[in-house]
Image (cartoon, rainbow, N blue to C red; front, side):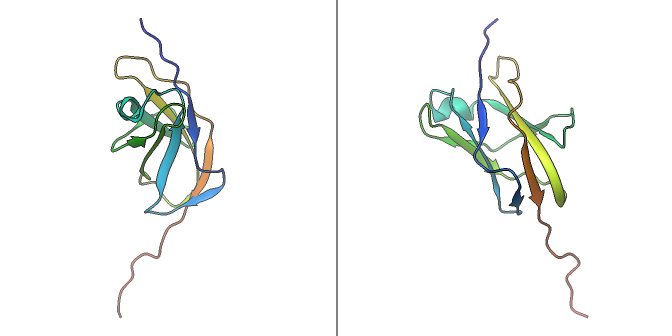
Length: 115
């Protein structure tokens, strides 16, 4: 069995706010290049939960040790949250979880109308 060490690091700082147009970004220091990192399978775990959510549409750039990846921020309800991220080679086991990212999703006004 081939084992792979994947080190994930968030670009964002803890306590940040996320809007609908925000991107979730992380570093893949152990990936040799962007194409390899883009081929990994990424999942996130929200608010300490044990159910993974697959991440699709990841784009990566750079070469080791400076490969960075990002994706449009997932749809998450407004309010404070935490998130961890994992990665896996398509034929390998899931990595350990990243450090915890704490953030707040900022919701916009709802039910806007003319009366």
